[in-house]
Length: 490
Image 1: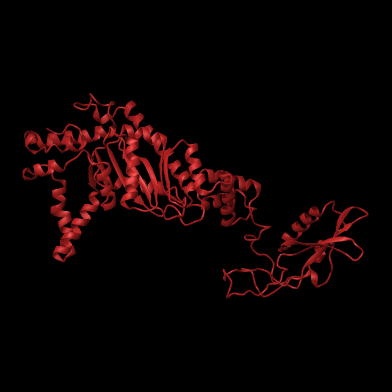
Image 2 (image 1 turned 135 degrees about the horizontal axis):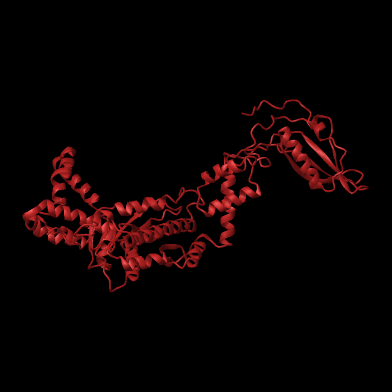
């Protein structure tokens, strides 16, 4: 590290002695900068002045030449500011020669050629030594477009442009300048809506009396078509810490026949009250259409959401996440017996058998009343998986740039684009590829006509039918027919 014991006592003015006449002042500065950087210090321009005989001149001083002034820390807004000014005496004069119409350096061999501080040891952090060259800035812009994280951009720049010596703040500043150029003077919300319009999103926005954004519902146009085709199972849940405004990020997730998740839409919500959920679900109803009903909604036990679902979708079944139910059952039993071990044992033992039972005769009538068409979706794994997939595109929500609504929109848009490609790929594979495992009866007739996931489920049910043998009609339970809409073992 640099020593703070003072200067080295060396007079550096001799390194700037030159008989060269420079056409412009900038040419002198460029030459002097090259010399000073090699010696280990930085020069900055000082004010324009004139000698007694009227000749104009300017000085190049050490960047630490200013004298540090005491601050009123009691009234200062920021008390932890720092300065590198220490009154370094080094400077050189640059005169304008009228006769030759050029500039010439005049360096004195006295104390003005010395420094009262150590020379630069590490180039990082010094403005003229470290920064981003034009080529590096273009790389930063290209990688920012590709949603690459700043730390990864930093590694690429350090590898491709080793002489730039940038720090992470240079990367952030360049990204910020690029985003400002892209927004063309629009505010965050205006840019957010502008991007949605450009990509032909279907969206709804509400503002309060002060024109402050309250809710924003965004739906990718292709996802509308997928939703209309596969509206059967819809999961929904909120995630947090995705934006700098602390707005809950509410995701609505559907399921394709190939067992792939798709993001129906997402909502930035001001709060999670019943009225807010009602507004969201009314928009979802408009998307699905009033002539269609999903088979089931799956969510956690959010009472406000449950109340809104009963209002907007009264004829659609609503399942709570099995994980939440198991947790509540365990907590209830633990409270009843005052023993957590008993609660865990009940959940993993008797309760597990009840939840997964399909053949107990005394439970058939109650089970039939509870069963709905959920295609095997009884947990929040899909929505939690969607949360995780979306958040991999996010940076820190508290970082000033990363958490802006337009940035969040752009990252979710990229995620949706990737999911669309994957969904189309799986649907195409189900139509064009034949599963080798399903070439035998009874699945050979539908092999290549149904999704591979459907064939896998039916294959398991076929093996179950063979295991039940002659008792298949008594022990089947018909759960597959009720919950998946597929032929069961009997």
